[in-house]
Length: 198
Image (cartoon, rainbow, N blue to C red):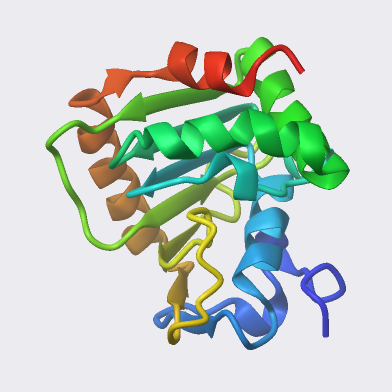
């Protein structure tokens, strides 16, 4: 059963909705982490990512998945090499170029914010998704663990991710993200420059 076919209350697939437990995902089973990320982005009003490293050239979100009104990305490491390969990937791979164009649109529309954490650290990576249009508390979810934004396909071993839908746990992750966000520096201009004009 696909994620989109199985959507239920709050947009979380019925077979993944749980009151008091999480769901463990890995890169080899369905739903794939990438598919669930796209689904959560498409149905959420806001998305907050705390990730140690991102390879911009590895991002492949489609425009229909990037409907959030606000997306905040907190980077643990602002990797110069990852920035440099983003523009080159956009020129050489049409699919990646479309994904990078979608990011450029998010930046131009003021819906994407990016900060670097400097010396602040967290383990593991996590993402918090909240609300839908007009219902900010509806269908909140949190992914904790490997998010696949670093370009690592997991060939060296398992990459585990937990989906959490318990409201108290999601709210707690959201508060921790806000604490980290307040201590970080805005690097959106650096990212926008690395992406280039498109």
